[in-house]
Image (cartoon, rainbow, N blue to C red):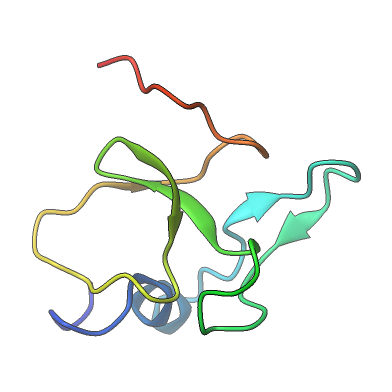
Amino acid sequence: MGYEGETIAAALHALGIWEYREGLKTGRPRGLFCAIGHCSSCLMNVNGIPNTRICITPLKEGMIVKKQTPKGDLIEKL
């Protein structure tokens, strides 16, 4: 749940979800870091599109947001 127009990261944070993916080398949890779209800590799969920066992506009703593998698949099989 969240408000349409706020970022996906803000909505997840409000729900207490702070882990978005795992680090490529360490496997440790990654969460929000820069919050302005410059780092890669908040990459998630949004509506089947991998590597979406959720800190700058506006929330819309009906979005499907999933945790992804560290690199993210280039092509999502539907």
